[in-house]
Length: 367
Length: 87
Image (spheres, each protein chain N blue to C red):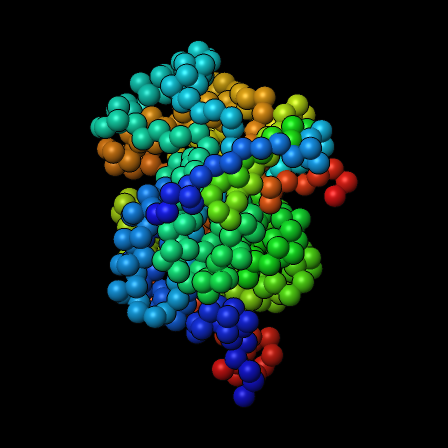
């Protein structure tokens, strides 16, 4: 019998059974995936330090000594000021009129509550620093930095037995983080949901492998099947980082409207557009994205103005659960999300599919 | 949380002043996402250190590359995401 091809360096490093990482904003998904033998990372970027501490306690109560991770979007750049009210007044009339006309034509209601305007730059440096200190104090098993280089916390983290992963969109970032001593690097390709780098998953993974020396690379971007997992290992990755895959899981806390849309979507139903934030991001196509690529649409504004303009729409869509308006970030692998499966089943199906690939390739029983 | 962990120290690094650099920047966007954005410009040498161990940020001005419609003429860049010209 051949060696189990799914038992990688990542499994040894984390003490996990399968090299599958779920990135999620839902604690129930974390619990299910970790207890199924995978690894899960909870996105906590917009949570307060107290909320993060409470979530860590909750997860520990559910998974015991099994490892898990917390992801923060450490900012890599921040503007000198961030007065949103002032910026809002600067939105050009042409674009504002276009939005107001769209609102009327599609009968888009006002949001129910105060618009959840996020501070430009999301988090300032001080808040992010306080979040990090909680992760160090709590000795969370793995800290993931969703953007900025985490080199400045490596010494403190390692002294506490904490592993640190960095997510990158370019090979030069991988090289720099590897040289700094991060424990693993997540190479995220263009196929991913949300704001991605410009390089496709099939290219960025081996490129990062080539420059990162002994630092393990984890593949991200469009990964939703065991075939993707097997392919990622063939590219030199030690595991996969998956996000969209869990949005429609049974434990996932997304609205059922979004879950249905994900289940019925293919890569063609995702669009890579700058009309939501002013930066290109991959989302499910919706009224907003269709309108902004219409013949009569004005020029999309840059950030932060476009984000300020879209925030009314997005919040109204969610508050009123309007199926025709709602959207969600989704990667190009969405085609393979075909039903609302339990997270444990998703893990096991992915493993079985990947082993099947290796068996077909080698003609040997993989495991 | 210990008070000193939140301290911000401002200073000037003459070694960095006047150097041209690129920044693979970005940050949080909305509740759940992050955004990537790229800058290139000249470092002023001014820096801020947040917490202990220090998380260092350099101020970049004279931006000759920035996202469309970025309304400011400067940006704070995390040290680990800076690439000095010729580096």
